[in-house]
Image (cartoon, rainbow, N blue to C red; front, side):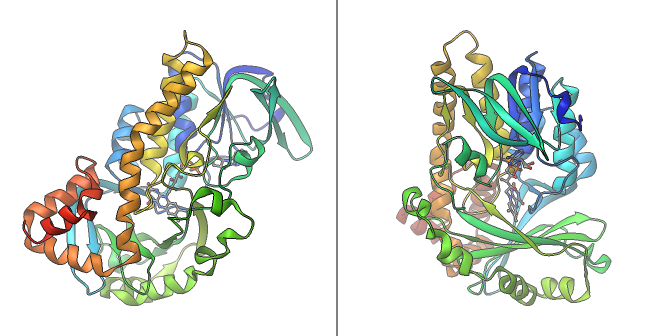
Length: 415
Ligand SMILES: Cc1cc2nc3c(=O)[nH]c(=O)nc-3n(C[C@H](O)[C@H](O)[C@H](O)COP(=O)(O)OP(=O)(O)OC[C@H]3O[C@@H](n4cnc5c(N)ncnc54)[C@H](O)[C@@H]3O)c2cc1C
């Protein structure tokens, strides 16, 4: 990693802004294909990222495509199940390819893989503005402290996550406010190491319209958090000044977190006897592929900047990786085509993901009406077939939304 902004080149093929999962995934694919890739981030890596650190099956698949899954799994805490816990204390363990790895480690592995593939990484360097000529983005104005540099590129990939500033600076923000917010901290409690070995998701009316989680990171450390959504608010409405001062900012996440520690026996034991390793910190989420224009001449928006996080679960690492790969593939496959062809290909691949995101938005119903979790988990405990369906949702081999149609509701009582 280069720490000096002075070393930035004047030109490159691709300039990637943001070295999270989306940016690094795009950089790995493009650099492997022989393109001259420069990646920048405002933070020096390894850096922390507020997250639940859960790696669900889509992330495992994308990490395998990027060639880093083995390295990730050497450091991660593997778990074969997600435990869904309902308001009345019902519990069903849904089998799935899941693991937990703190983002400090995961994102460092990805960033290093991009550098190993040939990308040049510069940090701390901040994206300030795009350089435009005739309506086309031809590069970016970058800065660190008082120093400012201009880098020109054939394509700029914006992978800046859920914070809207870069989207706003490039005219790509359709929505400035987040669609959800979540908070987490790390708690150490060696006595709980063997007792919580699955990823636990907890629904309760006291957490509605959100949920809580306890994810084991290994060595008696747990990522514990709560999240709450503001889904259903259309982009235009949410962009109005002050619009977010509704449900999201009034939701008292600190209080929700304390409540989480009273809801199950294991949560009580973990929190009462544990030591907080980090403060409780929050971060925004951008979900359901809403909130941003996906591309304009010379610029592609990818990852959570493009809203690539699932509404129901707040999981977004896998889809950030996937959309980063899609951006790279569109640029590579569209090499011989005109620029409009690259953009059309990228946007059509993103559009193909929309039905799944829409179904996760519908599944968000469980967060709003947690009694639904009671019903679902009560039925799942009695029905191996329903457990297989839930596992299919997690593995992305079946639709989550099928559970939330009238037909799906009837099937709950018949299978
Ligand atoms: C509390 C919480 C819990 C979550 N839990 C999970 C979970 O368990 N599993 C899961 O899959 N997902 C989870 N998510 C969602 C997940 O964190 C995101 O979906 C994922 O990080 C998106 O990746 P990304 O690469 O698009 O963006 P990011 O990971 O946010 O990376 C963006 C990068 O861009 C850089 N950047 C931003 N602006 C600039 C700028 N102007 N100049 C230079 N650099 C810039 C940032 O420093 C950052 O490194 C959670 C989110 C939150 C908030």
